[in-house]
Image 1 (cartoon, rainbow, N blue to C red):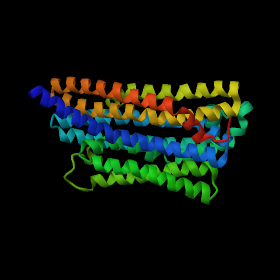
Image 2 (cartoon, helix red, strand yellow):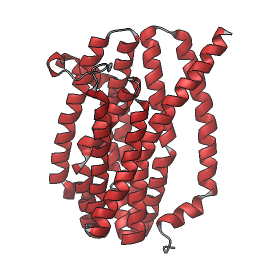
Image 3 (cartoon, rainbow, N blue to C red):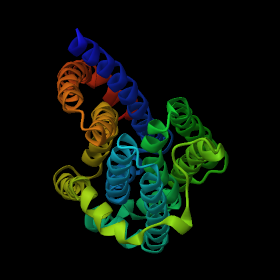
Image 4 (cartoon, helix red, strand yellow):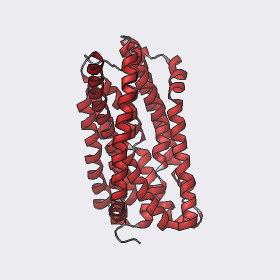
Amino acid sequence: MEKAHTSSVIYKQFFGAMIVMTMMELAHAAATLVDGAMAGRLLGAAELAALGICTPYYSIAAVISGVLMTSCQTMCARSVGSGRLDEADRIFSLCCTLGMVLSCVMTAVGIILAGPFARLLGARGASAELLPYARAYLIGLFTGTPGLIMVAILSPIVQLDGGAKRTTVASLTITVVDVIGDVLFMVVMKMGLLGLGLGTAVSNYAALAVLLTHFRKKDRLFHFRAKDMNWRLTPKIVAGGLPSGATQICRAIGPILINSIVLSVAATAGLSALSAQSNVKLVVRSPIVGMAGAVMLMTGVYAGEKDVNGLKQTVRVTLWYAVGLMSVIAGAVILFAPALAAFYLPDAP
């Protein structure tokens, strides 16, 4: 009976954590979906193709956020699980500081080198026509990098600190503000793909503002304490997040190579189709990322408490959710593939 009760509790905790983290990932995916739909329907195939070759930006940004988020989440969860709250504060403060510094550097470098970066992604040679579009969109995206990275770092921490509702509100904020920003910058102000990028950037900062309100109260588990930061923990934080960082590097390199192949075989039309597919893929993988976040959160706490049964039950629950949920999603994508394609390029062959 005790084991059944434990399993039931873990199912409930896992499902709650997974839903919140999936919604946050879906919010970013929805922002990309909106950008793709507006580019394909209101601008044209070339603009949609340019948007598509810029998708590795998210993986490059995720190298920083993935490393810091993974380490911050797992290390803080273990510290909280074992009752070492001062240590959790030090880790949290250091990860936030590293995130802000590195994201600001990435923003500056990205804006200055937006042109060369666009060429690296595929806007060159026979596809040089895409260069001004890709460069403009990248400038808009890089403007919001600090917001994107800090939202990724803070979301699981707010969830661990009992702020699931606030994380949900932040997710909804990304989607709503992105739509409003896209309409304002692209439709009203006629800024094209730069406007789409700026709309996404503003939505990231709006979500960050929502998450930061969680830390206004003094009774929170986590507090930012600059004077208590231990910089000697930096190598440990980086080492703990290296697997996640390596995964994101591969996710960035893969699309760059695929973009080049598609451009050489099917030119801009093929890349427009690939862009639509990439947009849909972001939504499909959102539950996977949500499950991964829930696993890291719960196993971190159980590891800190040395709860072996909790760790085993979490693995079992994850497998059931992964197989069942992703089978349903895969079937839905196959069934509605024609409609999804027509949604992006209604007039294209």
